[in-house]
Figure 1 (cartoon, rainbow, N blue to C red):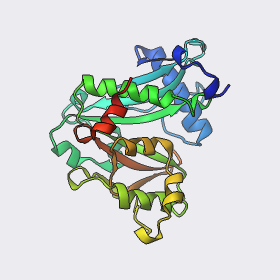
Figure 2: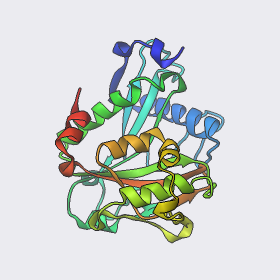
Figure 3: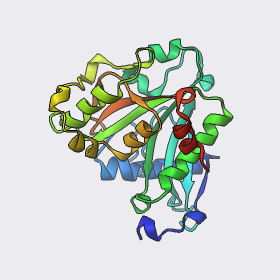
Figure 4: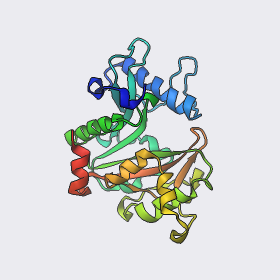
Length: 259
């Protein structure tokens, strides 16, 4: 079955309610991040086929559910997003992405922050409206909780920086965050994004190589931070996307909040 053959009206979007919901999200993440993309992790449960990390307990988990699939087999969750608001963090606690990016500038704004991450969709539902349904639910969550700045890591598959030179350089030269919001990749696994000058960037090739999720963030007025993080554990190269919800243009806001 392909996305075009799926009746979107049957899909349900809601927050995880219990441990079963969380395990279903972790099962989908295992199928995508571990089996499909070749990732790993110290807390991954290969026997149970669950992609787990230490932050799952503090995040809200947004689920896209197909009620015609088996809940007992954890197969009903076909899309996920993790959401963490700054007002839910303990004073000394950190965000998940702070291992990769220095968020000092964002924290210094004093504005309400929200970290997004671990988003993925079942292969059968890609190319349809699955991500739009999730984004609509994220929009409702943002508005309900007065979130002012959204941010989070977004990934390119693979760690070959030469292969990623075009899209990374394009993002750096065209979508770099303003100084006050310009988070930076930490030194331990940092990679420069501006390895090509603007004159050497092939815009068509660069844009074609940017993952759909990052393109969606850019269309909504998002920016990228300075430098990428090479994540050999998950076989990805991550950029930090930052979005000021109050600075969105009317066009972006209308797209973002449409239901």
